[in-house]
Amino acid sequence: MIRSAYLAAEGYEQPLLEELGRKGVEVQAWHGRLALSESEPVQAAWSLDTWTAPEEHAAPSVKSAADTLRGIQRNWAAYAAAHHRRTALIQGRLPPVKARPLRFPEPAPTAHLGAWTLLAPDRLLLSRSKTSPFPNGECRFEEDRSGPPSRAYLKLWEAFTLMDAWPRPGDTCIDLGAAPGGWTWALARLGTSVTTVDKAPLDPRIAAMPGVTCLQESAFGLDPHPVDWLVCDVVAYPARLLELTRRWTESGLAARIVCTVKFQGETDHEAAAAFAAIPGGSLRHLFHNKHELTFDFVSPC
Ligand SMILES: C[S@@+](CC[C@H](N)C(=O)[O-])C[C@H]1O[C@@H](n2cnc3c(N)ncnc32)[C@H](O)[C@@H]1O
Image (cartoon, rainbow, N blue to C red):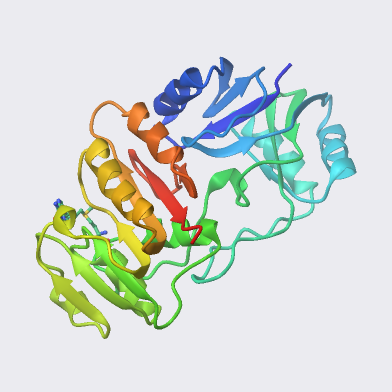
């Protein structure tokens, strides 16, 4: 009996499988990017969306599958790993679920959303509950294609949206590893005061934005000091970043933190587990993350 299912982002099935293995969760089968397990659900950073209450149902016809889903609740997101045409026919019989891109800063949808897939043409797997408020964990935004110097700002927007918190006008922010300035652009646009710290220079357009102050130095030399938001996208070994992050969390001086933990080659699960264990913190693979995880933290002080 399937008791939990974990959806990996495209190309990141392996780190999810490794993480689940370390947590004692055996994967019985993969259905596309969905890892099916007989174990109770666990928190898994590499899962974009975890199905926390899977149920299998016979679905001899398109109508019976749609009736089963409609009989349970209104809102469903389909994950189509196979049987695409049949999935589309079932979906066509379900109430539409609004999935337009968010216009940041806008809260994530709050409507209860379940997930379903066809394991076989006549076998439905559904879950009334799941961890992501977005269909298949895909948090999409209306993008700004002219302002920011890169698309990296989408990671920060997604982290803020999932935290349901973002900087307010007048907040103080430190942006470590800021160049060329995508995150700085996102912070400055919110009306904050941003100090950027990078060994490389920022895009001059971003450096000239109101509220932006640039320090051209190493992020590792900066001592913690009071700040509303510390954000960090420095390319560094996870263990080194862990040290830096702990200095800030333990100081109690940063009210909130968002930090990308980047991996090169093998995934450092040990460091990831240490990040996840920081009190007040959480770690997840965002839809806009590559081979990296995003740590967020709210200070209890
Ligand atoms: C992925 S980029 C950051 C992208 C940025 N968040 C944006 O949105 O444009 C990583 C940055 O980390 C910086 N970096 C690497 N080591 C650093 C260090 N010790 N101190 C400060 N910045 C560092 C690099 O210079 C690079 O600009």
